[in-house]
Image (cartoon, rainbow, N blue to C red):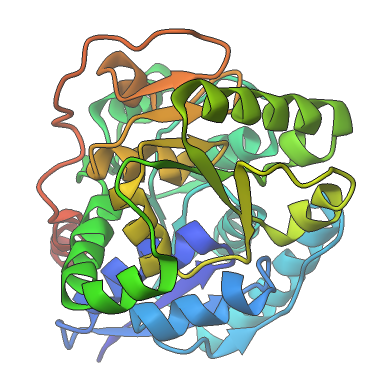
Length: 348
């Protein structure tokens, strides 16, 4: 009898991570995967296109829960997920990262005594004012399997007294980047024709976090920083605008050195990353993806959970003026993170 695995996703980074593991799950007849999409990212370019592009199994359940407060969103997701669990009776629940979808899935699984696996466990920014940090903490303490992308994540969990079920698997986002590079090489002409860019002559910028866009003063500071940065380095700024950010942009005069774009597909983002002079972002995922393409990053936050990108000179906070000495990061593994995770699950 197959082991029923419920995968819970709701946001762009989770679609990407889940795709790497879903492809590996399909290679093993012992698993049957059921996908729940909470609907946390609801724009077609933020959601549907990723399922099509990354060949993720279409969700059996789609809740369309979004555009409400953290508490309301998490509560509605918890109710809906619990109902699915009672109906599907899964043997394992897979959650990814640090979103409200992740926390809701973790709580529902815990209440029903269903084994929980957290992919990207152990990360800490040590800023509990940020919702994602609370989601990470709670999910880790509820999980049976904790799959850590870095050795620092292992240390963080040990400090909190979590040692059972903890594994350093490498980062499955690196698996995804290798997959993307192959796609880019095969579709280079099409991508070149669409974007008509020159390597190292632009910066790629994304801003979407609540603390960045809910405060107009802060958002204005970030745009001003990017504007000055572009002029100093004589580059354009390509800015794919997140739905949450779109309303804010309308209040600013268009700057000639900025190109505002609609949300892009995963492969399009990876293509731009591979050609960028720099990445300016408040995204956790893009900090690492920049490194995978060997592109320096400036992070629009007061701290980062991806401390190794800073220590090894590929990333800096926007409040700092210099990078550390640039070195290779070994923690992220060799692109076999998904295989490592599946092998652990097969043994248990």
